[in-house]
Image (cartoon, rainbow, N blue to C red; front, side, top):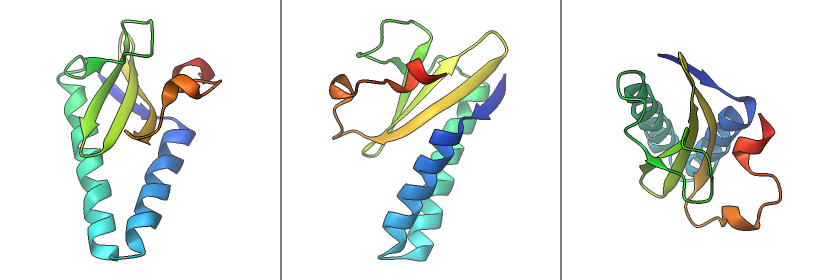
Length: 102
């Protein structure tokens, strides 16, 4: 399986890194590296994440990593990372869901 990141997901990573960097650049870089490593495990096990409760599509899944939800779409030969969002955010209140955009 091929991994692809959407622009919004890459911006999410950058925002997370910038936020943590206020306290520690080392931990910011380390945390983002660990998110990327978690995502890379999807190449071998694309359905290891659970189905997103707010989504009605079976192929919209998520990995839980610390306080973050890594939401992705499983395709026939690729995995598209849609967003990395803090778990405290309520997706049901968002008008446009990450999986609706692409």
